[in-house]
Image (cartoon, rainbow, N blue to C red; front, side, top):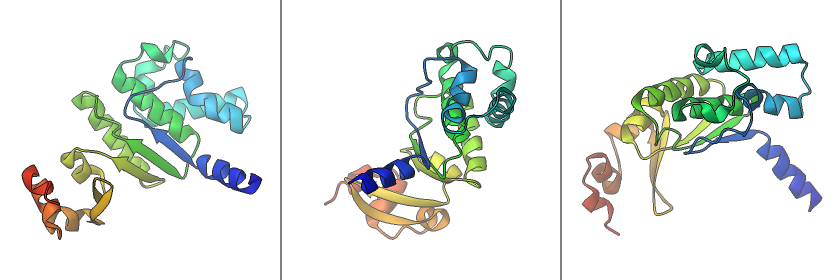
Length: 184
């Protein structure tokens, strides 16, 4: 049993979650980014400063927050909070980044910033993105899985999925004819 628990903990430490609703920790902007490194890697203040700056620059947040790093993260806008949560996740250097509709409640500019960062991150990490927005899937995904009530209806690379769907339910969904999707 202890081996199973250890294996689960090891796997969890290789994954990070970016949820639908931004969830910054109740601490400063700086501490949100430095949190994981402080706990797991025992970095020096200078190393943490560099990690925080580099991560915030990667998320295009540095210019917006560099003069208020010690302010509460909860004072940021929703889009800034979501980018901060993404920064906090990648500061852990996970192997897998799980994203559950990370842009669903954000303005257009924040959506673009998150998507731009995800496109960059997918070169370094495995990114699993759950979205109901077809345009977002088309912009970001390399490989898609269409689920319907827990059933895998279709999967394939982005080009095949969008241009040559095999299942009539997939074709109907892509064409916006949801009445056909509900055929059992």
